[in-house]
Image 1 (cartoon, rainbow, N blue to C red):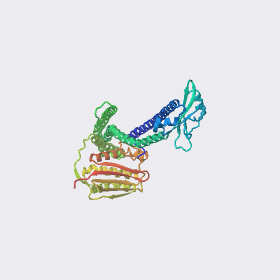
Image 2: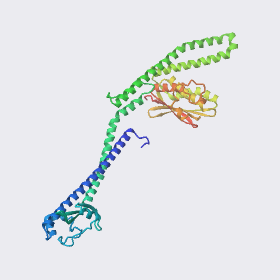
Image 3: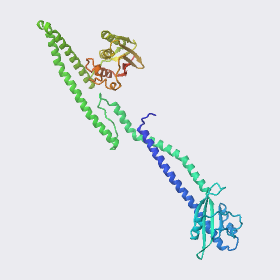
Image 4: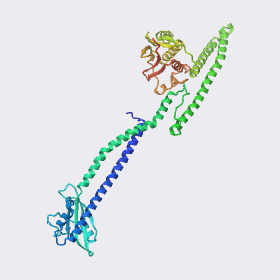
Length: 465
């Protein structure tokens, strides 16, 4: 099990632990009460026997007290030891036969007897497996102690009853805890099911589509209020994102016309003979910057339309091998200029549905990115293959790689995680490539290890064969 356990597991664990503590307290309390009740029953039985012996000693003066007791109590004396003593604690000769067991009296018992009080004691007798419960009962006549009755009973039955109770408790406690754990797991699952539904719904909600909402049963409880708060937050975010997207689209649209006019005027100025010689370098630089700004505006417009779901894609079969071959023609010039190797490995059996120009731009952007950051002496590998029902495009380089903390943000617009890697781009290339891939129903991922290179992987649905 993972180190970070689920809330459902923790709730079940705490519920079971709490029940185990309660069962332990209940068992300990029940054991104490049972033990006290059994000892009270033994003491009451000893008092009954002692009083019977006392009454018999009064009625059978000078007679066989033992015989009278045997006739009176019958089998009840079988598990008890009894003796009739004089006031000083010596055996009374009336209690025959002499073989009757005589247990020693404690000083406390004699002192209590002198004051007319009965005494209970627990004695461990050598040769007996269980201790004895002993009662010393004074017989008083006319305000004087005439005899002491000593009655004892083995606590073997008490110990046996305690052992049976502990055995039953030890056998039933695991069953009770197991049933409680199963019930707690089920109830926790039922209780947390709306939370799981919220998690699933929240994972489907992204910056590309904030119109989804978390569904709940409308109950005014903690989970219902949480869902309501989250939906309100999503509504505010949706409005904020919509406003930002609309601003980007409007700004790009407004910039496109003056940039186009500016480009035309610069081209006219370049063709002007007097100005051409003197200002040719400046005009050439201005034209390059205007072209870069126009490309940036076009990218922003495309991203705005993609965010709004307004990108219309032709559903035409595209041969990835031929597409990669076309891209390689343009990338070879860049690779040669950068002093690095470019290898292409394309399978002719991979065909997908979509727009060839847009997919061309995805592969070219990824390849251009790899050439820029691999550096002189590096190597770039472009490969296409089929994997199940998906067409795969992989662009690998053996460059410095991407830091783990930057990999989660490289598809963000205008993100530049490492200033040393800024090579004059607009910061929209990967964001644009990802939007095009998503519009084709595909996925763009990155796998990079610092100092070991980077691999961008495009996954697209295959065309029906």
